[in-house]
Amino acid sequence: MAKPNWLTINPTSGSGNGTVDFSTASPHTGRTARTGVATFKAAGVDDIPKTVNQAGKPEFIQMQSSASAGKTGGNVTITGTSNSSKLNFTLGTGTLNISSPTKYTANSVETSNNVAIAGDPGANAQFSFSITISVPANTTVTSLSKQIICTAAGGQKATCTLTQSAGDPTLQVTPETIELGWEGTAVSAQVISNTDWTVE
Image 1: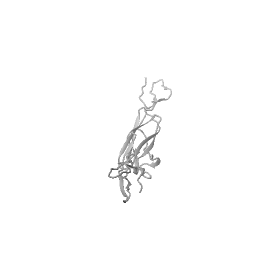
Image 2: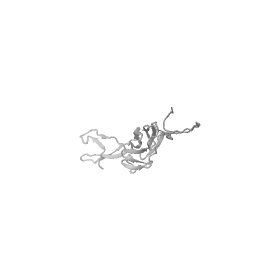
Image 3: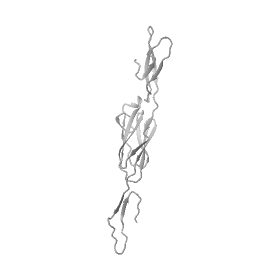
Image 4: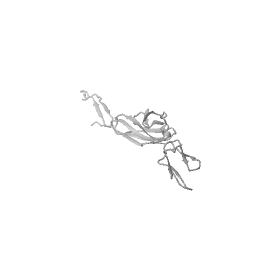
């Protein structure tokens, strides 16, 4: 069996007694252990294969901690990294009126929320993921926010707070002209507004 590409051996030759170091050029980010074989050889003796095991990285989830949307709304993309076998996106606290995504992209493949990722790429290496949130226009004069929580299969969590800018103040009054009769009986005007107002 050939030495795996991820395994670095130094030195790869020697004479007499010595020490050989085994390492990897970069960390193993998959959650499952990987195994390879390094074979020691010398003239006149049988080959000595040695199994080399490398532990997997503990299951994890990382996601950007904040994102923002303009007052007019639109699509916002949130990104992260994980090595989980599936991800579950839910909504936490906040007043921003958004829906939890039903789909996301994992390792460049569209995946359904809270369903095992095809091919389980996280077993062998961490992967990038992204979700797209549709944000409606903000019709209030206050900024709005909502927590988006991503939970890995092992229960690990990451939270992103999506904040939307305050909308523009509005004030409408009908009818156009207030017509009072000679006797002075009250006439109502309808006010439609998203902010505080006064009449002077």
